[in-house]
Amino acid sequence: MSTEAKYFELITAYLKNELTKFELEAFEKELATNSALQKELAFQANLQAVWKEETALDIKSQFQTLEKELSTKQQDKPSTKPKSKVIAMRPILAIAASILLVAGFFFLQTNNSSADPFSKYFSDYPNELVSIERGESIEEQGQKAFVLYGEKKYQAALDAFSSLDLEGLDLYRAICYMHLSDYEKALSLLQNLDITNLGYTNQKAWYSALCYMKLGDYLQAKQQLEIVKNSKDSFRKKSAVSLINELSK
Image 1 (cartoon, one colour):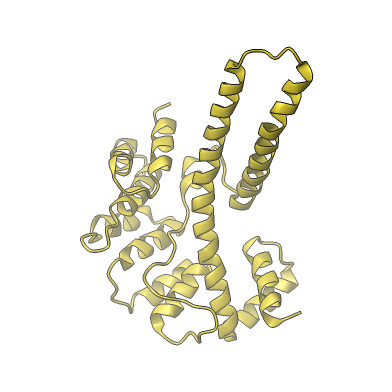
Image 2 (tube, one colour):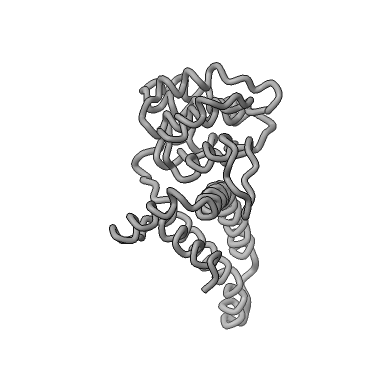
């Protein structure tokens, strides 16, 4: 097995929390000194975050398409040959089965609780500030900081972020504080986030809404969600509509 393939399997198991105690200790010991492994972990963690975001939106879209197709079939005139009806439905049933398989895998991976809207909708924002490519050594402080962020070592990432001066960095600092349950600090960072050049309007409003939810201010949360809902940006637009409906029940 190649080194890259071995890393891939180990990191996949690590991100899924499937390593045994012994394997986890060995992995983290290796991770502390192996820059190639650190790079690969950051790359896969960032990729997984993007995949989850896109998959959630895609699943909803596919179900809506399927619903329209089923509605159209029901409006068709009954056939004089019952057998052909069954055959005609097979492609749609196959599509439904495929969507359900993808949806099932997605929700098993995210481990979100439907009873807790925050856990259901809260996820990290992918690293867009510092380039991290496979095969490069991790020497710059910015790269090290985002490797820690990708590894979900949020306190260590915050410590590393403190020495950086990057536009938009407060978004990632706020997310780290949210993971550490310091929602007031996170909200303060988000409120002061300068979005002039980066265009993080939806990102700022989305994570602010989640903070307000945790702080029990649902009116402010809805106001922030309305900003996302009415924005031209697609980031979390559909999620905002869904969350507004949940909070309105």
